[in-house]
Length: 337
Image (cartoon, rainbow, N blue to C red):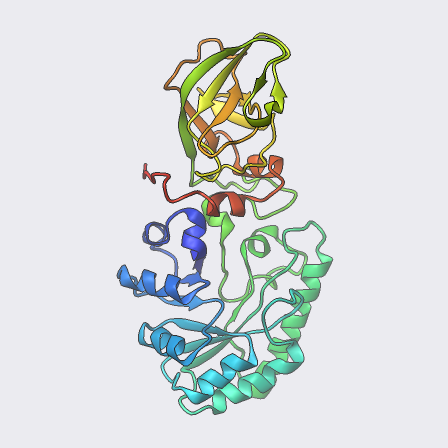
């Protein structure tokens, strides 16, 4: 189940879903995202991870054949009051994230209510979400997997058959936890890994055999000579310690480059690394290219992607690749290659 929420992590949901046509289904967070995918002609299952919150949303979701997550008693009530007889419903259980879902001891009662509802779901499945699968320590994830397995056993004993399950996010699927297989389920839900960034705190995308899908690039629009002692950019937070050449690039926080990306963060220009010099402004950044004497206006520059891992840039900005991907601004042209 390819996770394409948040406009496919900034990559374009319709474009990505079409490229991932071998996926068995897709997952999004909000109803509008699901309806937009359906409007592109997708007929495969689409799971609404946050579910619906009103009778009107329920009606729209059912009309569009959207699979629903149910994680709160108010959502059970909506289905009791409506007619979900044609729907696939995923009962979400909270095994340790403490974000969405019924606690394990509440899950079977919620199941009973859903199955007893007028026009109950065509199929009822079971899912959970892993909170710490990105960490090298297996213990927290193994504990979540054990709680889930215990619920599956109880469900099976009372229903006479095991439920269809979903556990594995990108990290749970790729980590290879000690609880082998227990962190995946019948359906896996890869997200960030689909886009070529690492979901694991201690392993790079290259370690995992992942390749970047997005390359954020721009061009050099000016090259300036800066004498020793002079500052560059707002606040002059970077000062030349030698006769320096500074390249000005057409990219800034209005394009999605984090304003707090510090001086020294790498930029790839002409295939070589050069350090950011001074503050990121709305439309431009400055890069110290003193050691790239042949560089000229028009040179291609990569901010992250092919040749410069997004995870490395994100770490320098004190954030994660997810945020960098999602914050690329609408004004940035998307070009498929």
